[in-house]
Image (cartoon, rainbow, N blue to C red; front, side, top):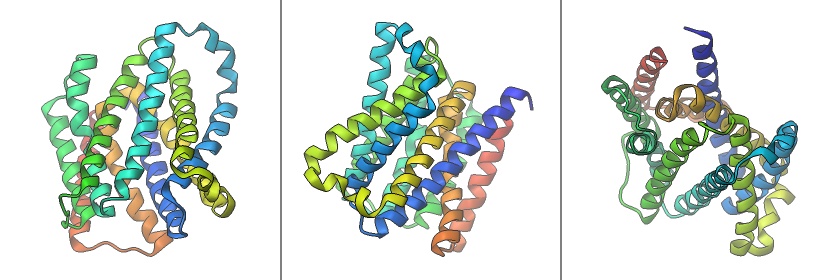
Length: 288
């Protein structure tokens, strides 16, 4: 495995690890009674500060961004914010089981977007191993008991579509914009849009998470930032399809941390799903 592939593997594992832990910590915060939108609002405030500090060395380069590049970067940030907001709304009107699985349909939508925007085609073997992982995720997250339909299910599927477009569009932007600048705009703009938009829905309640859930707000903000950082660096190295497909392994980390932090255990069906994810992930890794 070459140097670039080792780097890609590290970023792929990083984004799955950080996001897997993020889901569990976020659940712990919600179990305290935090409003999901308030949680997202408060977390976004912290993310704005984190991204501004982390990427401050890049600020002198921002003046060299061309107008059409700036437009694409802003679109990427707004699309990302829309995905986050719609996801929270969808989760409120469907089951956690459905939401946990349906959001993982993203790799299916990456395929047509990658062809249309990047003229890229994935091999049949990659698609096969992605489906192995997807079946594993289905068994792990739903225990074979997916309940459809709910109105929220269609919102979650729409979010999966948005995320697929977002990842492919990001790869297209990277052809002329550095990965670090793209990540800054992706994180900063999306967080800023959420901070501006959510108060219109919740009013003064938007800041409730900052008052009695600050620990979870801070921790989820850091985990979210790190997962996005790794994700887009991986997209730069191996493309949106492999990155999004390997992202399915985040379910394994969620299950692991749920066991450690929440005492949740796996059924026999879920263990079968775990094996499927490991097998599919292993062969995906061999392709990079």
